[in-house]
Length: 321
Ligand SMILES: [Zn+2]
Ligand SMILES: [Zn+2]
Image 1 (cartoon, protein in one colour):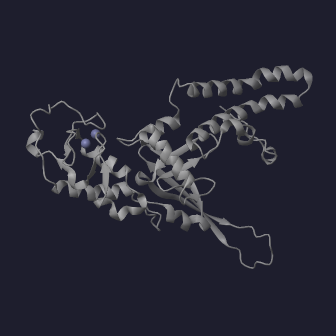
Image 2 (cartoon, rainbow, N blue to C red):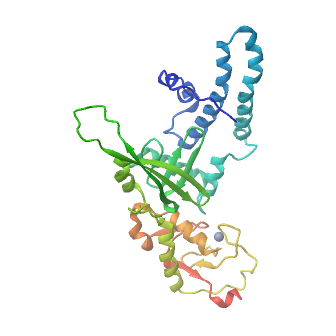
C-alpha cells in the first residue's frame, strides 16, 4: 500500500493527523498507548485520503475518472483500521503488549506502568526513542515499538559521521557529529533507534543495559541476572513433590510446561516453572537498582505473598524421573 505523506509545508500550518484529530486522539498523558493506537489509525486514514483532495486541482473532466482510483487507498485504509479497531484481529501493538505481560501482571497493570513512566520520573527522549525507567518506546509514523528495558539488548549497528555544514563563518572549526543506529532486540521484537553524539551520554545514563564503547552487543540485564539467579536457586533447599500433586499438572503461571519449582514462602501450594518465577521476579525489580536485585522480593502470582530468590525451591532430581 502506498501512502502519500503530507508535505512539510502543510504540517507547519498544523495540517497533520495529530492536530486535525487532536480532540479524538485525546490526551497522551491519560493513556499513552491508547493515544498512540488512535494516532496511528488517524495518520493511516488521513494519508490514504490525501489523493482524494489532490483531485480538486484537476480539470473537471479528469476529476471523476481520477477519483475512482484515488479513493481506493482510503477505502483500504479504513478497512484496515476497522478490522483492528473493532477487534476482528489483534493489532501488532496489542499482541506485543500481551507478550510483554509478565506472569501475575494484568494488561491494565502494564498500561498503568507505561503511563506512570511516561508522566513521572526522568526519561530520555529524542525524535526516534523515549527511554523511561522500565521501557524503551519508539513511536514512528505508522507504528509503535515498545519493550521492557530489562530484557532489551542493544547493539550499535552503524555509526555514521556527519560533516556539519557550518553556516556561521566565525566558527573556525567544524565539529563532526556521529549518528548512531542502534538495534534494540527483546523477546521477539526488534527495531532501530537513532541517537546523535550530543545525546549519547544522556541516552546511556537512562539505559539499564550497559552500552559497550566498542559497539559490541550490550548484555541485557536479564542475561546477567539469570546467570546469577540460577546459581542461587541451584543451591537452595530442594523440595519433594507431594503425592497429591499429580504429575500432569502444569506451571500455574504459564500453563505451558511442567512445573519444576515451588515457593517455600507461601501456603498456596501452586507449582511453577523456574523460568516463570524468574520472569515474574524480574518484572518487579527496578532497572536502576540492579545491584540489589538478588536480595529483593516479588509477589507470588497466585496468592500475592512476597517471596525472594531463596524461597524458590527446585524439585529434587529423583522426582523428575
Ligand atoms: Zn511457567
Ligand atoms: Zn503463593
